[in-house]
Length: 267
Image (tube, rainbow, N blue to C red):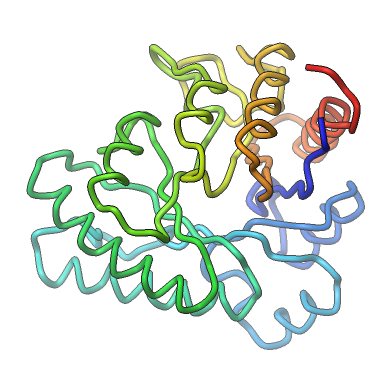
């Protein structure tokens, strides 16, 4: 292994004031963080973040939309609200120096909805590219793009050069499951970001790594696949704040990633 270049974690893995959470994350050894709109929006908190040395890697651009708003909506008002939110989130992410933003698909898998979604995402991908960021789409069980395979097919149909896959290891393990290494290899250059978490194979529990169905062998194969496809972006731990010891879970997962991606380790 050549080693993972960046290891991030999601800010929402811990509860509390934003500044306190970043301090605890930094003390756990992290130098990068994923955030949601619109954390650190106030001038004072944004200045604090800039002075903290913590780098914002990725922003969940479609999180927190107003009720009913959706990028794939046939309702003009709902679509405009979703587009406005996303555009604002992209500008906000660029101001914070994020290199990646991502969208979660809607629930409507009909052909018409997917055409609308693809059209809007292409526009958002263009805007993100102008701001120097990648736009990713996360495969999400239970929504319109539940698998890596379905998401890659969708990205191929939209065919925008700045539209990528966000691979979520936990989601790949749910239901019938997808082989993580094979999924990563299928994505190849379309892989734009990676979330790491574990679960029981059914619920999206966001457990610490190796606390659910994930095995060290599968995790090692996942890192090997990332290495094989030449992925140089961040991998981010997306754990639940409802775990018995959320900070301890982050520490354990971080140690697991570092151990398995240490240069020279054979997987």
